[in-house]
Length: 173
Image (cartoon, rainbow, N blue to C red; front, side, top):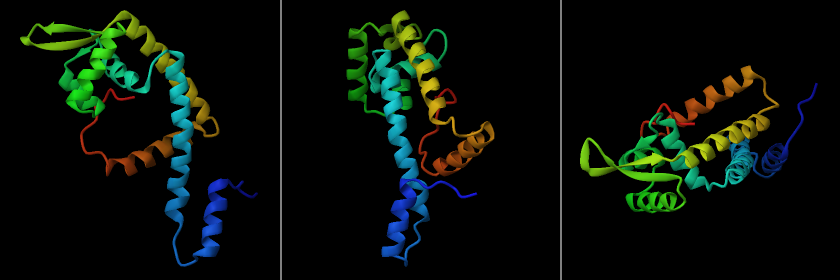
């Protein structure tokens, strides 16, 4: 039984004819990852859009939701989880406060500090978005068995560990 070919097979095959001196196995893997990333990005944007969220809003709101009750983090904790600059985070929090998806509260442990808290509307939107996201991503992976998914996840984890510079929260999606 022959394995169906995809666009990457055609591209790599053409390069192999033109440059037989090169090993194109990296392209066989990473070109597929790149193409799949585009499909994933589209699916994520649609899931977030249906919940009236921008991807950056999702980043902040999902960090707060994953924190658990009372769904609040300091701006510094949000910076760590979203990997943006302090100025960018301040702008994002301001915009989310304006949309009433989060609120700022005084930190009871330190009156000079604030905590960012997810509002009920923010929680409703992030919960709807994660449900839509999981459903959309399951569709992207429907050609793989659970065993294949687990194997692929393990291989991608192994590959990504070399790129991770900061420890990721165990609550990351």
